[in-house]
Image 1 (cartoon, rainbow, N blue to C red):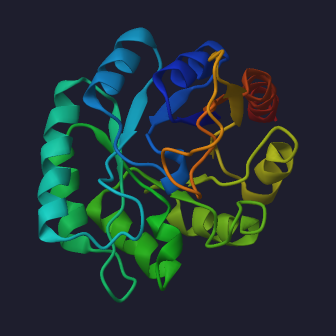
Image 2: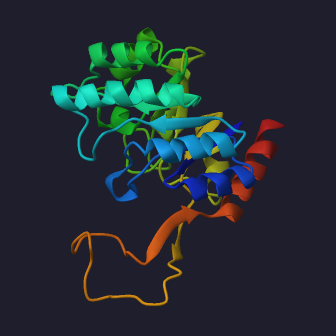
Length: 249
């Protein structure tokens, strides 16, 4: 069984790897649900960890209907990410009607080869999950990250189990969203999944001695500038232990 940890900084990726994670999904911008990290970040993480690193390719937050200009950015990013010797990319393209954008997904998967390709939770925003599953199988996508169309994997466990049955051995269904060391054991039993995605997020205080709390550089809705997102290593260790026990049954 595999535990993938979603990391938003190079430091958290190193911590996750040290704690026993099996794979990293490397992102930036937690508050926007994850966007493409800098090439410097990718390079440093790939050089410093010995586990696979999959990189999200998403030029902005918001929906998954990209303009032609944004799509050209995505293609450029994929070509650069390949040069950094990552293990895979994480993508998601939808049409206006809530269906998989087959043309763009197929083109980017081909461009990324031989890297593996994960289709992220844009899948959860599809109009019909079974149709989307079959389309992604036909394209040859390696993995789908999904919460079963719900806000959390626990809420969507029944649909995740259904998707796993229909996926067979053709594509991996990886549950994600709200997974932690208190519910992963139940999700193993409820879904039959073999791979799990988790952020194990925690926030650490800034080491600044002087703080100006009168302003926020990102505006009123921004995160606390005197905290940084990281990972809870104890939670990761606990989940890895649970998965190791589950793989023996």
